[in-house]
Image (cartoon, rainbow, N blue to C red; front, side, top):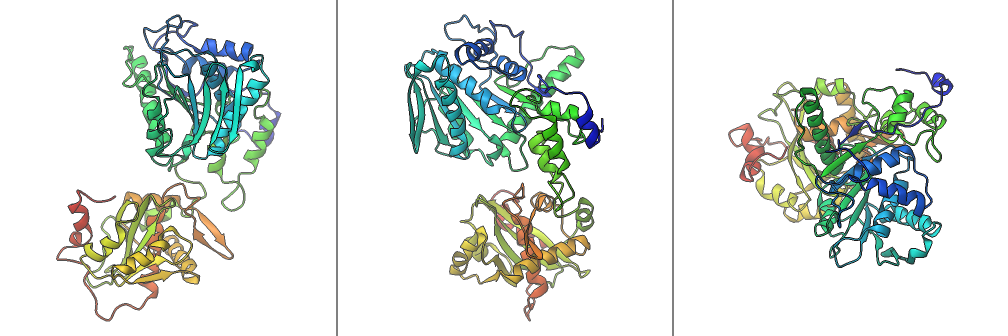
Length: 538
C-alpha cells in the first residue's frame, strides 16, 4: 500500500517482523530437544543477562536446528546447517545476536575434539570483524559469568578473548590465506556482501572441516551485482525455499537437495513503495524495539531520496534500509531506453575502417578488458569488447602476438587508473601507447555520453559491455565528470575502454594507409585467441 510521508508518521506504531520474508523450513518440529536455539536463548537471558528481541529468539531457534536423528540430549548434538545466511537491514542488531550466539558456543560447547573451542571472526576489513569481538568482550565482562573471562589481547594482528575453559575468540581479515593452520568451531563472517570472489570464502570456511557440528554464520544486508559469494549462496537458498513451496502446493514430501544451507532474510518485497510501513517492518525486525530503528528515522531517510544528483539515490535506501537487491542503480548514468536505441545485434566495423583499441583494468585488478572502436558502413562508430580475462599479465603478450590486424593506436588512461601501470610493460614488447589523460580523459567520457544519449554509437549485445553500461556511476570533476570505478556496482572497465577507443577513433588522425581489420573473415581477427583457449571471453 502506498503511504505519503505524513501518513507514514501518523499511523499506529508498528513492530518489526519476527519471521523473515524468505527462510529455510525446518525438517521437523523445533522443540527444546530438536534445536539448540532454546538453550542459547536461556544462556543469553541467565548467563549474559541479555534481553533478546522476538526475531532474535526466532533466529536462534531456527538457525540452530539439529540434524534429523540428532537431539539435544545426545553426547554431541549435530547441527543441521553447516552454513547460515542472515540478511537484515542495517542497524537491527546483527552484531548483538552474533555475539550472543558465539559466546554460547565458547561457554557451553563440549565437542569430541582435543583442542578447545575456537571461534573465528572475519570480514573484508579486520576492524569490522573486531567490532563483534569487542562487543562480546563488553557483554561478557558485565555479565553474571564474567569470572569465566581469562584474558583479552589487544595486540595488533593477535586480538582475542579467552575463557577459563580454554575457548578462544580471535579475528582475521578475510583473505585467500586466512585461517591457515586453524581448526575452527564457529566461523563468523561479517559483511559477506563485500566478497567479490570465492578465494577468501573458500579459505576461511575450510577451517571448519575437521570439527563436529561446526557452523559458518554469515551476516549482511542486501548485496549488489559485485557480491558474487552472497549472491550465489542466496540463490541456492532461494531454490530450496521454492522447492519447499512447490512440494507444499502439490501435497508431496519435501526433500532438500542441500539440507546444510540455511537462508534467513528479513527484506521488503521488490516492488514496494519506499514509504510502505509494512515493508519497513519486514526488513527491520528490530523496528519499534529498544535500540532498534524507529519509524521516524526510516521516514526521515526515505524523505532524503531524490532524483539523481539531488538527494540520496533510491537504490541505496532500498539496499541498506529495505534489504533489497537492486541490480541496476536508479541513478545510473544512462537510461535503459537510450542503451536499447544503441544496441544493434548485427553491428560490425566497415572493411576499410581504422581500428582503435583500448586497455582498461577493473578496480582491484582482478579483471582486464580490451575494447575497440571503428567506423561502420553507415558512418556511425561501432564499439565492442574484444577480450576480457582475469588479472593483467596477459595483456602485453596479447597485444604483441595475438592481433591479426594492425591497430591505429592502443589507448590507455595515462594517470589515476589501474591500467596506467601497464603502459611501460606494453611499450616494452614493442606496442606504442597513446595516453588518454587530462582534458582528453574528460572529453572521452563526455563524447561517449553524448553519443549514447543521442543514439549515435552502436554495439552488439555482449554481457560484459551491456552490464557495464547499465551500471555506470560517475564522479564530478568541476563542470564535467568521469566514470567512477569504485562506486559502480560492477566492473565498468569494458565501458571505460570503449570510451577511450571511441575518443581515439574520433579525435586522432587516421593512418594514411588503411589497415584491414580482417584476416579474410570478420570473426577471425578477434576470436583467434579465444578459440585457441577454448571459447570467447564474454
